[in-house]
Image 1 (tube, helix red, strand yellow):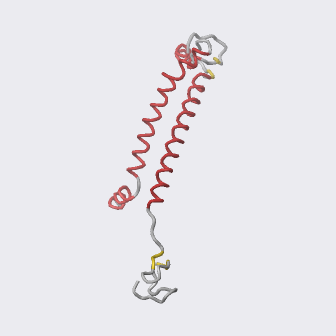
Image 2 (tube, helix red, strand yellow; image 1 turned 180 degrees about the vertical axis):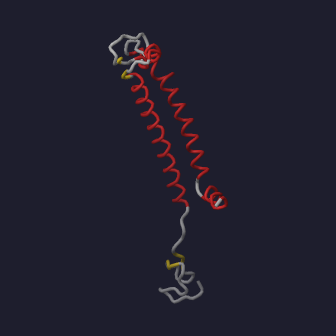
Image 3 (cartoon, helix red, strand yellow; image 1 turned 90 degrees about the horizontal axis):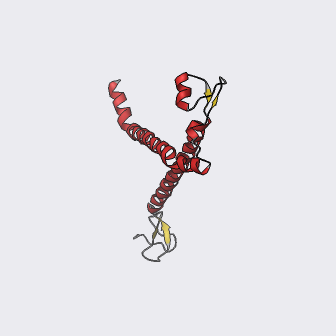
Length: 145
């Protein structure tokens, strides 16, 4: 059973998939940092110095100065700012992944177009195109193909 599992890991694309997951997690962290530290501060400044991460609605009816105070009190809340940040992160990540997949598909298509397996050959006598498997030219009867 151990040998079979080893073959499964080696034969399948498990290593490729694992590398993809690790790279994806690291990439998601990078995008979250981009949104939180680069994109949202200028947007918040343009909208009147709003810090989106501190936009919330406390459901217990009390006022809290910040999301940290809300969390320290353990109060339930609708955290709109976090949702906005996560939505922007998702859109950026989706756009970047779309561009990567689109580029990959374009490269893969170009590689597939390069590998052309001939299906015809030219008769040495009459220069007509005939199937590769032909033993005799159908046009002139030449057998020295």
